[in-house]
Image (cartoon, rainbow, N blue to C red; front, side):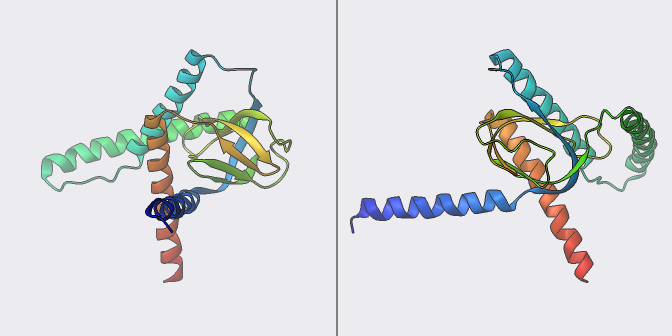
Length: 193
């Protein structure tokens, strides 16, 4: 076996390991999800706006989930003010979410699994025709009344592959999924103890 053959095999093994890791780091749960058929083709401006909206949502979630640090008196006063402000915002977003639920603007719940490359679901909430392209709208946080909107193509019933994303969007999605995965692992460890 030549050195080139070994390198090709090692690269294939590395790609398989990367793929397995990418599938393991995910957001899994019962979440509101909907499918919107994609128009014939999104323009570059529409595609950029779609990813910009997703990036803003993921950045907002990162800020919301960021742990607080600091113990000085000044930082405690600032944290108390921020806590009150956060509580008001939480109440406001909760009310908006209830209002959207009342008018049935939030889609029905489905058991889903979102990775950086794919989306899987159970049930008949989404179409099942292979090759169909559309936009998956998934509400990833209960206090945020806006969905991630991810272009995808259905591979088979219950499984879709996400369209290629700009690198900055892909990085933000991978970081978000890693935080969710870490939280699920910590929760399952606490449940076993």
